[in-house]
Image (cartoon, rainbow, N blue to C red; front, side):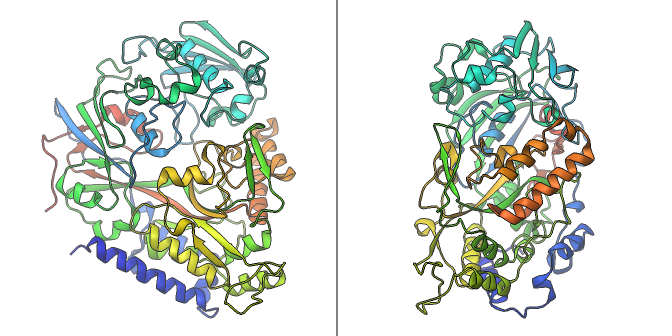
Length: 611
């Protein structure tokens, strides 16, 4: 018998109380003070003791190998508590929900393998000279949905738009600045980008300043922008244009037919898709609330989804009409500390030496105060697990599992705070600053799913247990768009935000400079240091072509971030994807998913429903 949503919420609140009781005691046993590895090792063995699961128990592809029927239709659920924003173009989107919508009708020109390296199997091939001069060739049968060929000038145009001084998006970063002549063009000192040359209709040459190991794992912008559609639209108005919002096109397996803003998209097959004709005649994407996704799956009103709330998996593991796929996520959740602001003019981080969270001792104590191992087990049944560094195990060659990071020890947290001068001087149960002033820390956390609120309450309670007064920003959880707008998206930094709970998708490239570099807008903590700059630069140097050297650099960087703590990782994540039993040819593996989008089909006209 399945628990009701109310039952789940009460259960989650009970877990908060249980965790709070654990946090109150320093004598809670060895597990509470462990290094967080024991639970992870148990999960890796696939044990179900205490209702724990392991991501290793799941495969990435459907077991239904039946032949897809002709004229098939399917419904894809985008699981989110908020509407998708509707910025439906790779050059301008800034949130994962929009990316899910885009991926069905547009794609990158380059495919990747299981190690996230660009291959020559995609819509474009490439040759490399001197490690930094790339000549790309777009295949002849790659066409936009309106029939126009995807041209080299479209690829070049995408670069020009992102480098334009009026570009309002978030893509212009160090990978673009690594192209010869890019900065001169961006600064208005040149009318063209010297390092980008259109050789012919299908051939593009890009010359990079530095040859780095990241070029083939994310350092190349692999998306084209149809110049014949966007050329007459001012760059600053492109994100709000009909070409992005109402009538987006791509060269992917499906064409956009209709959009209900924020709610749904209806696609039809693109018969001339370059890989081959898609199996489905029609695909409907619709937003599905985390609170109703189970019912939608059981009734068959959605056939598959982008991801399933892992906290709901134990109650639904045996859902009769679906098969659960899974893999380690390219992501982690974290607690971030605001240490400065974004300088919009200079387009770089501006640290604030007087920031409320500027004392590393305060940040370290807050890390010691929380029991992420227990959170992963109790809230997510082992399908999220305690994290130690900012490079997740989705990149096993670089994830430093042996880096020692603070783990749950409330007495240690109290000791650090006392020694740093954070004392309760007025006997109200909360610590004042070393200067004797009241310390109230504003905590921003995002809504979504049954665990969002109780988890935020747990962190607040855990910090209160070591004497810190932490209050939820505005007394409530923030919706997705509001949350990221307030913590730093678009270069905005709400001064009311002191601490926030976020999540990052790390992408294919292990290089963390796009999230933690001085010139990265996504560096929401606004952390900067010379040592951080040095290590990030070394990770992209020619020496870093030596994998062992690069591993050592990024291990040192992971250790630095554990010492400085501009943010601390809380949980590594898994992705679970339930798929209706009638779905065939769906595969969520990173190297397979693009082909799967056109190969996916249905073996029955009607979806299977739960018994």
